[in-house]
Structure formats: structure tokens, C-alpha cells
Image (tube, rainbow, N blue to C red; front, side, top):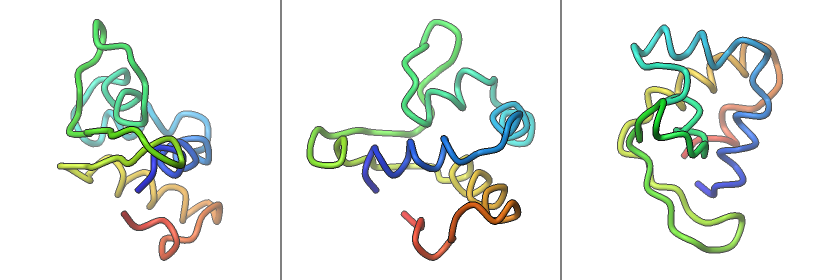
Length: 88
């Protein structure tokens, strides 16, 4: 998955979804934001993402897809994204 694709998924989340995902996966809000490319490591931690520079903002390797999976479920329920086109 590219970094731009990951950011697009984050941008398609409805208001409050980051807080909802954080509660559901047992992480703090800043950690979930960092998963989607945030850089606030003083308030949140890294969450299984590794980014390599390249086209489309670079390539993102995800060691744990639980946050991504939950985000896609929320987006799909809102009719904002096709799961088939967004699978990592």
C-alpha cells in the first residue's frame, strides 16, 4: 500500500472515527493517528508501520492491520470506500 492510499483511507473516516478506533483496539488516539502517518511520538507510539520513500508518498508495510481493518469497516459501512480496492 502506498502512503497516499493510507492517508486517503484516514481522510475518508467520518468525524470521531479515530477516537472510536483507538477505544476499540486499546490504543491512545495519537497512536492511531501515527498509524496513518502522524508524527506525534511524544503522546503516541509507533504502531507497526514501516515506510519506505517512493512514488505515491512511498510504500507502507503494516505488521498489524487491526487499525486498518477497523477503519475500512467503518468507511465501508458509510459507503465511502470499496473494500476490494483498498485491501493492502
